[in-house]
Image 1 (tube, rainbow, N blue to C red):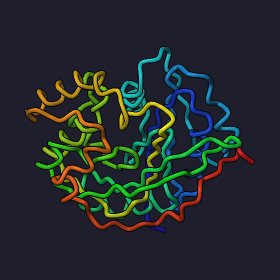
Image 2: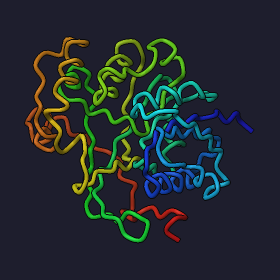
Image 3: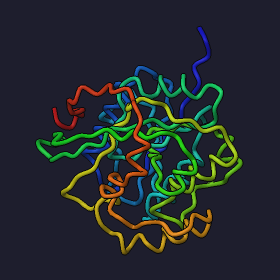
Image 4: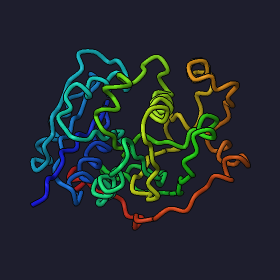
Amino acid sequence: MSYQPLVSIIIPTYNRQIELAELAESLYRQTYKNLQIIIVNDCGPSVDFIKELYPELAIQIVNMPQNLKHVHARNRGLQEVKGDYIMLCDDDDLLLPIHIERMLQEIEGYDLVYPDVEIFDYVYENNARSITDRFVFAYEFDVPAMRRFSTFFSSGCIFRPEVINALGAFDTDVFHYWDWDFFLRAAEQFRVKRAPIASVLYAFSQQGSSNMSGQLDNMRPFLDMLSAKHQLGELPTKNFFLLLEEPEVKARQAVTEIIWDGKPIRSRLSK
């Protein structure tokens, strides 16, 4: 039997039981099984229930002694990595069943691969999320254009540990834009690729607060910091959905493989 590399998945979490359980369900459904699942609880309510709910999964829980927010939590997760590859995932996003298998195929000859995503809106019903809307987010890999508007989503991306060894930890100072910063730094030194498959479901609820919706005033200082770090010039602070309508962004829309049947992923919490 051929060697099955270990994939270490880092999941920062804070008080999202329903979402975390659905993510665990999506990991349980993966066709690829050799996983190290590192859940970093950012000083929120206990998440020990997830190991009892999904005993089949190799889950390791790291409890942060204080709430330092998600970038610090990801960096803490990096310290526990034992795998041949590292995958990042937000606690409210979902991976479709062939995602990890496909990413391992795509990364051959590359150092970092990221997928396209479907963004979904939802409402809560019976300890589960019911899907209310969805749309495809797929754009060409174009580093100069991605210095203007990043189309890199970190959830579901996979990379070799050598990337972190060279670049160091995620930058906590740029906070909201840690993923954009990580992408730009990686693209400068490593072989980066977009995989044309929408194998990750990215959660966005109109009901809650989100980086996509508002908070523009709060985010501006971090955007300026990112711009200064990478010499990006003046960056727009428009709402995410307005940015998608910009001609230069629309021109980068790409064809992708759609594999989601549109059905919600119900966890064992909802049964």
